[in-house]
Image (cartoon, rainbow, N blue to C red; front, side, top):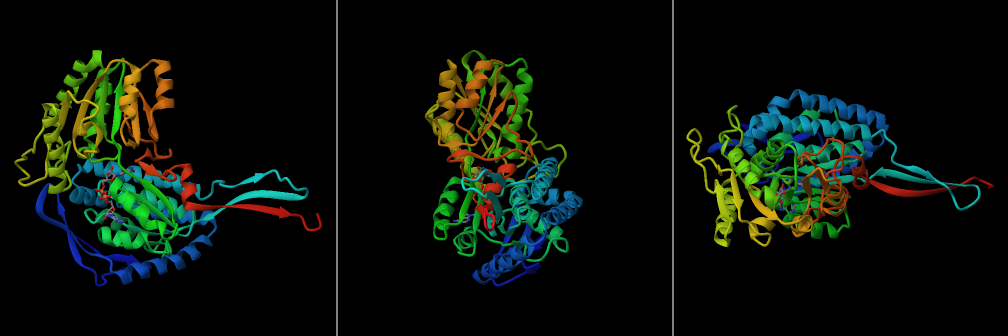
Length: 481
Ligand code: NAD
């Protein structure tokens, strides 16, 4: 059982906020963690500590910041098993996925630690004689970070590492459904990073809302749903804080032609059903050339039916439960309405009973065919293990189906046709573009989306500097010149 409260200026403080608990999605009667929400006073104290901590941290030479960050990451790495277990217990995903998530979080964070000592400015030729022009960057200041429940290690680390590498302090509020992993990360930092550099708040939307609307915040980074992203956009307007929003997706794979249909479908199904489909980068739409439709549908069904549902702690499990009953009912509602709109359920389509996990929030891996682009299931983010299959006649139609949704996070094309690949790279309206593989991103590439999937700079990779620092144009004229 985990018990954590708010980390403020290097100390865990219980405060006076409301108590809440987390539960194992595979065995919902089992309490996993008990926490206490951060009170308004606690939020204020965390922001004041962050302001002072940031001033001290920014004064460290960047190479020293990178060294300390790497020591902190070593400490997190040593806790990999404990963190992966916390992820599985609160979020439900298989332990192997919890380990994989922790490993990826560390690899991304190590790249970001290196960013502390890479060049981010420049020297620009001057218009005026005797003048030297430079573009300089400084830490932005106090960063407020709000994260969702589907990646309890990766999303907090995607904010902590770039914020600290670039000389900021962070005030992080993890999801109230899965806070344990972020608390274990913060615990690993104690004694390595100076106090005040990282604070952890606890609680739900009201704590998040109070944090992002506070004038002591200079930048707000959020990962979560579009609806919450819009609320945060509005809340941050009061202080004109800089924003980086990473929101939902309705990601598609276009299967036009492939030499290796089995390999292609393995990747599609992996991208669709990992984390029980509760990933912003999950593939949820298969848009397939009409001539390949039946082979693709059959292959997807076989793979969906081979999925082993169970507790994430059972090594035989390949897909865990959904996060909670609300999410289970939400996913079931999407599938029921798709049926009513005329979609066919090729496989799955209902709650799953797992004998060893009575009451667990399991949903069957589901493949829907006869899905037309206007149907709700083809347009809205389901955030569950549901794939829709839609055939197309020609590539113009494929691109039009691909792009005719509000979202624009990630996309994938399977084809060996150079002209089509070129068109996909130019015309797929998504932040991330994959050709002949699934949607798993590299550790050092910019990660983010366009349209309703994101606002502002991408989160990791070299371009994160745009959010985590401010830009300054400097003009230096030689004295007497
Ligand atoms: P959510 O928007 O419900 O909650 C996310 C976080 O915001 C939680 O910590 C929550 O407490 C907090 N919050 C809620 N209301 C708030 C408010 N008014 N002000 C400030 N904070 C508030 O999202 P979720 O259900 O936890 O996560 C699922 C969503 O996250 C999906 O839409 C998914 O696509 C998206 N997601 C996106 C990415 C990405 O990188 N693009 C990654 C993971 C998840």
